Structure formats: structure tokens, C-alpha cells
Length: 114
Image 1 (cartoon, helix red, strand yellow):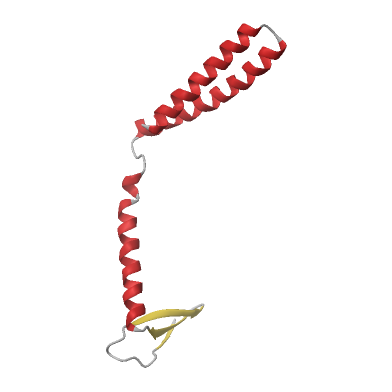
Image 2 (cartoon, rainbow, N blue to C red):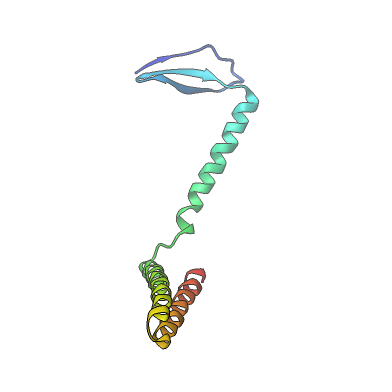
């Protein structure tokens, strides 16, 4: 890797810039751009530190989220099956399936929101 140094004043810090595979050079930034870049780096570093704490990291929480997702899917299937059963067979079977499906979807929604 070769480094070619560009002339830079003491007021402007230089950052290495990749020009191609294995070729880097130092390039000075204007002071306002350097401050802007430093601010962006600080914000990104702060966001990266908050990222791991924003998700579900415990196994019980993952199991609960998976169970709620499976219940939601099962609820949607029951609603569709109930609608078809109501049109083709005894109405009571369809109504029971639709009510069970809506209850499963509601449980999943409440579980995922809490």
C-alpha cells in the first residue's frame, strides 16, 4: 500500500482517501466540512451504542414474539377457513372459526404491542 502525502496546512487535518486498490492518499478537508464530518461520526457512534439495547435480547422475549407471530398467522387462517365454511356448510362452524381467528389475531396484536 503506497501513501502519497498532499501538502496540507496545520489548520486542516488530513484524512486518508482510497483512490483504488492498495492506493491511498491524504486529502485535506476545509474546516467546516471537517467539523461536519466529525459531528456525523459522533452521531453515528452514539446511535451504534443505543442499537443493541433497542431490540429483544432475552430468550423469553423472542419466544413470546414468535408465539404471537404464529398465533397471528393461525388467526388469519382461521378467519379465512371460517368465511369459507360459513358459505359452504353449517353456519355455526364458520362463525366459531371466525371468532377464534379474530381472538387469536387480537391476542397476537396485544402481545406484540406490550
